[in-house]
Length: 283
Image (tube, rainbow, N blue to C red; front, side, top):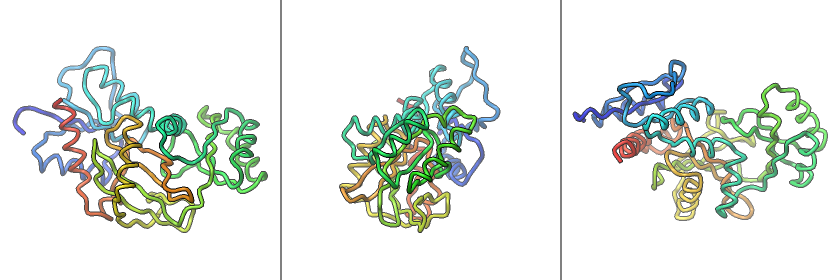
């Protein structure tokens, strides 16, 4: 493009995903401004020479959220928007929104103390899954199979310094097959989907799960688009599980990785992201 349009990429490190985005932008003639998150500052007044749109790719939820709010304050749109990052990046807020929109999701109870969490686990039933409100890659998640497990995990969480661990997100354990399903949504379309297999109950590709392309049936496509729309849309990964009562959405990721998805499906995920971001910047 020769009209001076610039795509900002706000990132932590240049992972394979960011390399793909940079390559896709170059192929399309889109000028890119690299914005390492460790170097950014945000004053009250807008600086000169801002990009036309910023693609948020930081691995930190907090940095992503404040950067998106900062650029929006300056009048620069972001992908995804700060409201989407805040909502989808917080499992508690996301679960409430999915329930409000009638989207099937695992039974979930939020507790604000270890004592209340024990009551929540009793209500959900064993086994149950405890998750941090904010986090990815399956980190700090725990499956509790009985009361002894629950007490030990909650004692550990109570000793952690971050206040986020005082919010205890309790979710039913879904006895799914040895896989779950990730569907990548960009704007109003589903780009690709993959199954993630693991003999462990956590199937994250980042934890070594095996991946294969998944057929995008009308049911899967419709549910993924509904979930993405519920949190505000943009560039999102919607994670689903096959339960006894049908597909359930258990998470929506606002800054998703896609290396494994690209390898499994051959889809041009990076290209779809760049084209969508350029469209947002030109609105």
